Length: 280
Image 1: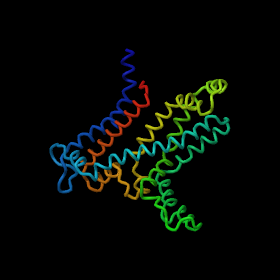
Image 2: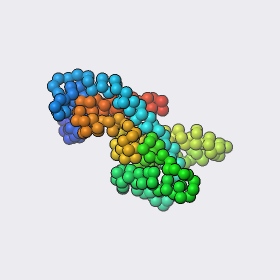
Image 3: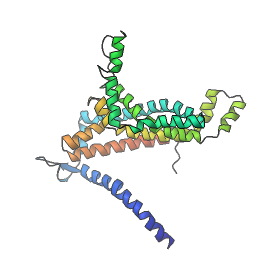
Image 4: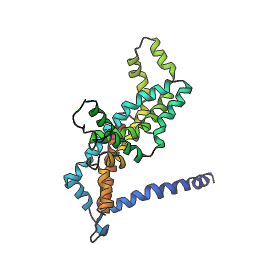
């Protein structure tokens, strides 16, 4: 009777997961093996591997996958380098300042990603605030290429996803017992030694969670690479949207989407193994 009651309680959650997580993946998987459509049809009759062979055989599409992975990794490292000092400062601040700094970190999430990406185009454009200021000050003669390249996209993505790195780090650092660092300091350990041997190892669960979260969000981002990259930084996500909406090739777009998901899963698995993540 108790097992039946537990099954009844789990059923609504299981139904939601099936309808909104499992079923869409199954549909995309089946669609990726359909044949290309003709005469404006999104897909044809029968099944095949045309979508996958087209993706890996054409260099224009195949090279977008490693570029997307590299873009996600660089964005993740940038977010980690910027977020760790912020999270460490918030974790050691007083209760009053901690609440204020916490609100400052979360404040960018109140603004839509489209608005923030447009803000970066205003800052990084050839006639933007940064280039115009540097030219007026006589520091440069021509605009710097700050936009429509990997640098601009990584900078904008790091700004957008920085809170998603700070929050897991902050949670892990706040869970650390301050007495451990104080004991190491009393034994003569220097600050860098305390950070390397105590603080950073204790914060590894936050580092792992933040890196995985930011990496997955970065490689699947569409708005920021499209606006700041100006469609010149070709990521697999942009090509998937182009194949599904502009070219109306659903099997090809589905094959690229699943390939991107498989590559992301492989990177996350390797990262988890390298950082010795304990799956529970």
